[in-house]
Amino acid sequence: MVVELIPPTSHRALVRFQEAEEAYQIQVRAREKSIFAQLVTTQTLLYGDQSSFSRRDRDGNRSTQVVKMAEISVSSELPKGIIFDPIGTEWLLETFRHEQRAVG
Image 1 (cartoon, rainbow, N blue to C red):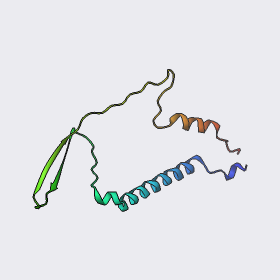
Image 2 (cartoon, rainbow, N blue to C red; image 1 turned 120 degrees about the vertical axis):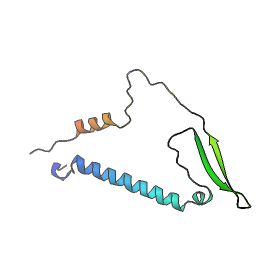
Image 3 (cartoon, one colour; image 1 turned 90 degrees about the vertical axis):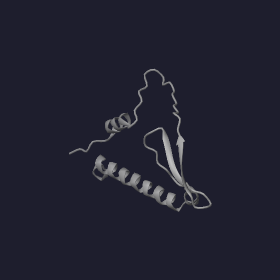
Image 4 (cartoon, helix red, strand yellow; image 1 turned 45 degrees about the horizontal axis):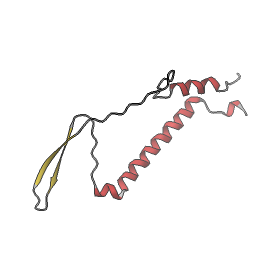
């Protein structure tokens, strides 16, 4: 393996970012063309404990409905000694440790 031909870590990270962005755009386009998206509406909930929406009946009268939401939580135990790493810092550090260094 020729070390000079291996792209730097920053370039590989940029490619991964671009691939993730492309995957997101594909999901957006797929959602727009979905048959289900044409049948039902999508509502993004950010904060709060209720959701309200307007609807029309057969006569064309508009009414507002409020839906109360309940709290749902899930918990699980981790074995002793395992630390939760949501952003993959451990994996990234391990990758850097085992990466071959360019001989200059």
